[in-house]
Length: 113
Image (tube, rainbow, N blue to C red; front, top):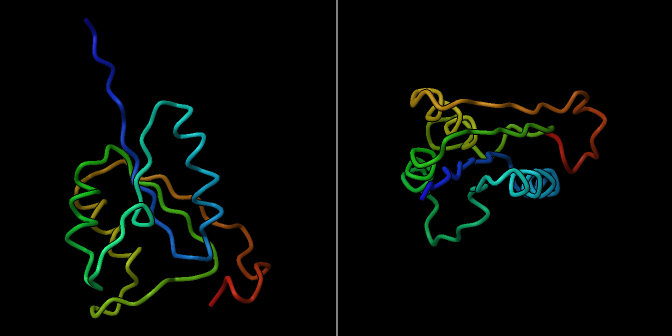
């Protein structure tokens, strides 16, 4: 009996401005037999979720970052949370795929900083 590997993909985005982009990516990943993971799938009571995020990224095979018009919520370190996620994935040598909006200034004002 052969067991097929099911790849896990961590999707990093700002929230809620990139919610529709994140959702649009999930179905094709599922169609490819991959398991999408992101923080919007997990509720937590604390503001410091980085240890949880790091465990999730550690368990994933790929890291996908979706960038629109926002840098994101700043951590106490002065970096956005998604920037910290990216740095962590890069230090773990996870394959990284970035989708960057080609014209963020064209986004609605509520979706950019």
